[in-house]
Image (cartoon, rainbow, N blue to C red; front, side, top):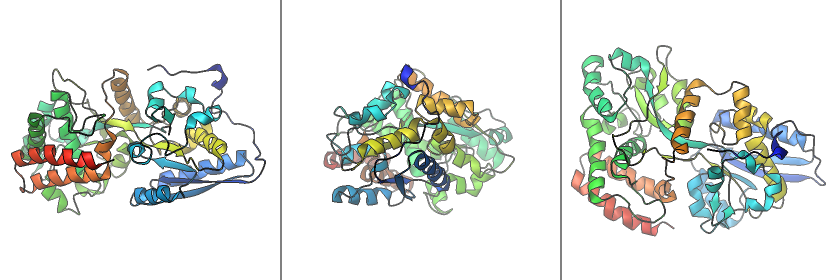
Length: 429
């Protein structure tokens, strides 16, 4: 993928002289995240304020729980912050016609857009209006514990067949509670969807239409693959997982993951450091090959912008707001301060700054290169925003949970995924 670079921005990211505001300016900036993201973002804000005397960035940050609900109330009431970290899928919710946020095209002079690939910019467009820019792009990858597979006497899986064959081996050699892969319910349904996407060439939801794209045959196989992962002792059963503190308990908090009893995860590349952070000293992670069926019609890799920065259309200071997000996205000093707190940077200048500072760990870099190769080959389709709508995700989880608890058989589940899925998609605006 070609990155456009203009001579005018060869020095993008170099320390800039202080710019004094003509009058005091206060900009509100909201984001979600964990402790590291909060601390690094606060340091970046302080550095920006030092460069811009008279400008105050008021931070409004929290965890993920309740963030969307709070932002929705603010957007409806017209009290949203000047600068917002948003989920890419929320564009469909807040800006269906491109007029929910500021059109950043109006502030192009403040933005180093040449540091972004054309595709990165297109993902922030709504009906020709630039509603947001991505700090990073994220996709699902297979991460394996090499030590666990070595204890089982197996190489890391290179195909779906090898993954399915690993389940009985883990049980025989490592014990009944040892599994090749684990994940929260959403991880598992996405994993099964990847298989079906490769085989049939369609995701569950049509990329641009409000309808189910999978055929009845594909839907039935989605359910069958999900169940097969459990029946062959490949994936941790939902019932067992729920008994250990809840089905949604993060993997890195699971003792079986920490000691290597659970040996893999199908996860966002932005979560790799979190997954790695709790492992004991005997464990070692590696990015595996992206499992692909022979003759696959699609990679099946699920990817989209990790998040976007957007500016309120009501901001009294859109020029300074645009300058601030440009700083966060493209400035070299900001890149080193923020590090990987929002993923491997999309902007070329920010990526280069981290690369030169040797701040790209091998695991994240391996995932980044795998994802980039798939993107460059045009093998990752942008999903429908409706697929990640909170109501739709809840619907999918409930269907697959009912499968796990024996409350729906495969035929019933596939029919509900078709009929109820289409009905819900028609109601999501």
